[in-house]
Length: 406
Image: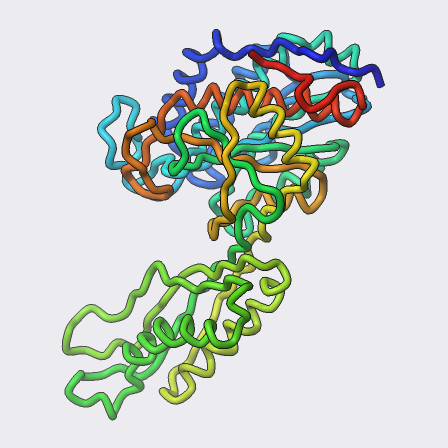
C-alpha cells in the first residue's frame, strides 16, 4: 500500500458557512429514530454532488464512500442522525419546527462535522486513490433507540472491509475547541426496563380489599434501586433510575394497573452480563407480598464504549493537528451505540466541546440544549485528521504528528 503524504490539506475553513447552514437545516427539521428520511435525502444529495459513492440504507440512513472500491485500508467515520422526543426551549432562528422533537443530544453537530470531514477529504480523492485508502462515512439512524441502529449498520455489512472507525459526541461541559479523550471505557452499558403491575383496584378507604397496586409500585420504585446497591459490587457502578411512573387518575381510587420505566446503567462490562437476571429477580421479590401480577420488559441495550489506546493515539494526533485542545474526561454513565462498532473493529470516540467559554453549561437531552457552532468545524477537522493519521500510523510512514489539517 502506498502511504498517504505526511500532509493532506483537508482544510475545512472555507466549508464553515456551508456546514453551519446544513447543521441549522437539520436542527430545524429534526426526525425521530427510523424516520430520518428528510435528513438522509439531504445528506445523500450533498455527498453525491461532491462525487462520493452514495448508498441509501434500507430504512433510513446513508453510507458514502470515497477512495478506491478495493481499498487496501479503509477508515470509517460515523455520525448519528436521529433526534429526541423533547420540546425545544431555545429561541434561535433555526429552532425545531417539529412539535415535540429536537436535536437535544447534538446529533445535528455530529452529522455536520462528519459531512465536513467527508467533503474536505473528497477534495483529495486522487491522493486517496494513489494511496489505496478508502474512507467510509456512516450516517447512522436510530442511535437513541435501544439497542441502537448501529446493529442494523453492522448486520447490513457496512462495517465489512473497515479497518478502523472514529466518531465524536457533543460534550457540553467542555469549552468549544476542547476535545476530551480517554483510553478504556468512555460510556456505560445501558439497558431499558419497564415494570407493569396489575391487580384488583378499589376505593382508597378500603385498601385491604384491594391489591394496593400504587403502594406496590412505589415499593418497586424505591426498593429495587436500594437493593441493587447491596447486591452488586459498588465498583461495578450499576445504577437503576426511573424516568416515568404512571398509575391511577383519581386521589380516592386505587388503580388496577401501573407502569414504571427507566434505565439500568453499568460501568463494568462483566457486571452488565449479570444485570438482567438480578434486576428481574429483585422486582419479583419486592412485589410478591402484595399479590399483584407483574410483567417485566427488560431490553438489553448497548455495551460500554471502550476506546483502545491505539485509537486514542490517532485522535490525539488529529486533535493536535486540528488546532484543538486535548483534555481528559471521565467515564460517563450515558450510553452510546458506537460501542457496537468497537466490538468489531478498532477505533475510538472523542468528546467534542460545545460550550461557549464563559457561557452557560447545558445538559444533553434537555429542551434548552444549545451549542457553540464553532464546534462543527473542530469536529470536522478532528475526524478528517483521524483518517490521515490512522493510515499514516498503520503504514509506518509517519509519527502521530505527521498529519496536518491546518
